[in-house]
Structures are given as C-alpha cells and as structure tokens.
Image (cartoon, rainbow, N blue to C red; front, top):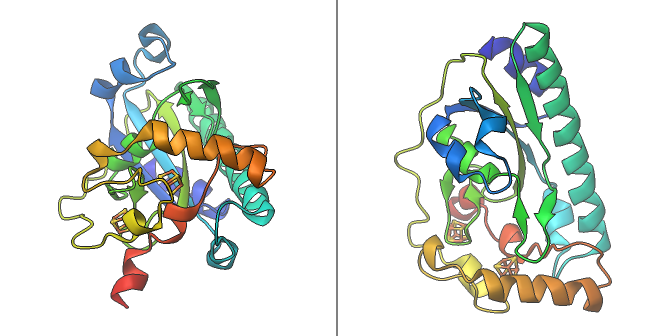
Length: 223
Ligand code: SF4
Ligand code: SF4
C-alpha cells in the first residue's frame, strides 16, 4: 500500500511523502491521549513545498500574501491527509489525520503532535538550528501534516547525514535572537512573544513569522 498511498499524495499535489514507525513516540504526543492512538504505530508524513516568490516577499515580518499562502497550503495538506485516511479505511485499517496547523493550547502553542518529529522518522530531513524540519533540497520552505495508522507499511530510513553544517543564516535572520547554535537551545518564549506582536504590528490574525523559514534553503545556498 505504500506505493498506492504515495501515488494518491503526489497526484493530490503533495511534494514530500514518507513513512516512519512511531509507536515509541505516542506517549509524547502533547494533546492525544495514549488510548486514542492505541495501535496507530505508523506515521505517514506529507509535505508541501512553499512558494519561493511568496517567501521572498517577506522582509521585516509576515505579509498578508504569506498568510494566505500558508492557509492554502495547510488546506491542501488537510485535504490530502483526509484522502489518504479514507483510502486506508477502505482497506479495513484505522487512520487518524492530524491537522496541519491546529493549536490546542494557545497559551503554550501546543498542537496534537509534532509533525516534524514524524517527518524526521520518515527520513524527510533533520531538525535545524531554527527548530524546524530542514529538507535537504527545500530547507524549511515546506509545511507538514501527518496521518497515523495501524496499517503495516514499509518504512523509510531516517537521514543520518543531515546537518546545518556551518550555516547560521537563521540565527542572523531572527529579530529576537531566539535561534541559537543548537535547536535544543531555541528560545520558544522569545519567538512566541514576537509572533504575538506581529498579530498587531503586521495586522496578521495568526501566529506566523516566516523569517527563519525564508532564509533556510540549503541547496540554494550551496548552488
Ligand atoms: S519564527 Fe521568527 S521570531 Fe521565531 S525563531 Fe523564527 S525568525 Fe525568530
Ligand atoms: S538556515 Fe541554515 S542553520 Fe538555519 S536551520 Fe536552515 S540550514 Fe540550519
């Protein structure tokens, strides 16, 4: 079924598709009770590449163009996650589509689970200094969603050689110095505070920024 599901995803417009065995991650899902994910040991990660010209329009913070694009990409991810879930259910297995961007706890900015951790297992990239998934070709210029399932699937190998190397562009780009040498030092509070302020200063009704996403494109840097 791996190939069939991948074909559904790609024909829906999805850029990236991967599968990881994630049973050990289930106890760490922030807003999903363990009993609700019982048996859902496989995580399908799907990713959509963001538009380079839209991101390039970001200069001092989020633009309305980026906000719209962000929402449309999330919608495509959610629709494709539903399509994949229905295909899995049609084969007699369980599937749980996880929204691309749905905050359960606004104060702490917590979602059902971390899409990037599933994508990491599915071999789609590494965790960069900006604390986002970095794809070897598209950098952090992607958005992700997840489908959890009990359908036994072939799994992808996590990337072993992915790293930011000597790149530090996101450290330079962050206006509040939230990004440090390692992703474990990323200052969530400083970042959230800036995102909160953008909702007022840039009149954006969503917690987005785009600055550290925009600068992260490893392949482009090498070229
Ligand atoms: S989203 Fe913006 S404020 Fe947050 S870490 Fe990235 S550049 Fe800094
Ligand atoms: S901009 Fe450079 S340092 Fe920052 S996450 Fe991307 S590759 Fe890593």
